[in-house]
Image 1: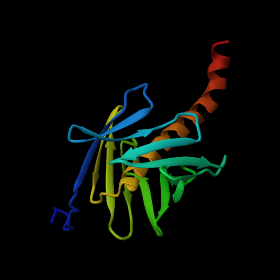
Image 2: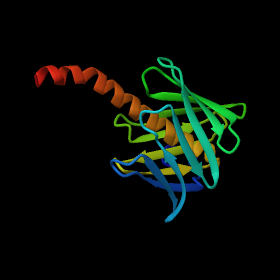
Image 3: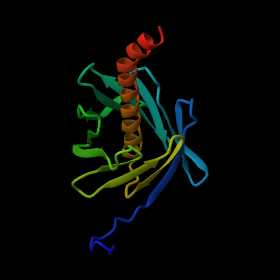
Image 4: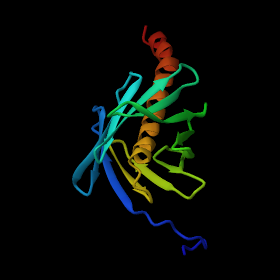
Length: 174
């Protein structure tokens, strides 16, 4: 028991990831062994990820109310869908007949988690170029999906900031 009187969840899977400041690939490690990647594909509608040999394709659909369809990359079989709230703070994953929730755990967007009503919990932490994944699950898709969603929100935020502030910067520096 922890000091709040609740049982702590045992985290069995611990992964670390790295991404160079100007690189588009998250490299995922177990100890010091490369076990996967997430290719962010900036400014495109799709990303590829792999973890322990399982490959996934994340494809964005829609313009204003976007959602991401997920496919097994070896045969393009649809396996799930990710939907986002309009404030870019939460997401919902539909996968294998279950619903998983994703949300930020702090104001600076450096901690987030994926969880379900059945008790699954995956925790993510990050700095600008590296991070950690702690999970009580070995579900490769869900481990990657949490990283993908965070990247999706960062890219969307960047697009919004450029769209809003570029005209201001152009006007100021005329």
